[in-house]
Length: 254
Image (cartoon, rainbow, N blue to C red):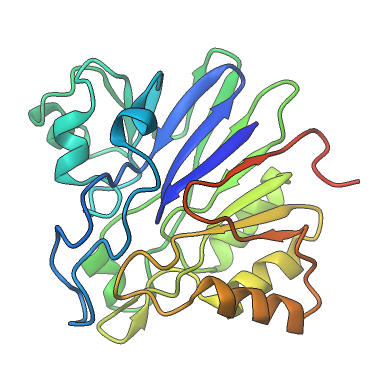
């Protein structure tokens, strides 16, 4: 398994012979409005040309339709014959955008050797959840590969904990930027990321969704500091830079 963080939540995953692009946000810096007045979004550039990011991609996963997970640039540049996986209820929007091979994942899908399962996620707490709309987490399993659990745009809440415990992943990808909306936390912050890593010590946690949007409140340096203060080893909580590739073997930890 190879996982490259592109920017924010956008990942390029090489898994069981497939190259999967997850939540493509490919726009230029400052091409979208500010959420807080601090800066236009995205606040940082892509680490490499779009052509390199999208080269030889076999499959695209779009967890939900917020612009930082599927933006206008991605809509324009991705080949319309690429298979796209989404959550139920959003396939029509993607079809109207011209994508011809769209499959919603309600429970699970088999993609050759890969079993892809949908899991619960909650984009905040309280009233803001309705504003944010439905989101999903996913797990990936295949012979000879680490089991990967991708939390998606979610806070740490009981159904997510239960799903991770049931999946028993080797690798967990969290969205850890502490984004806020209407005064409410809508993805994990440093404290919840540390709690996640502490609760599932068998897994490596890869923290993403950091430093790219102006409503995120947690920096990589702050998350590293919190991990050190709580005794979380840097081999267990990985905080990749944009453009960095991580390789995971089975088992991921000695």
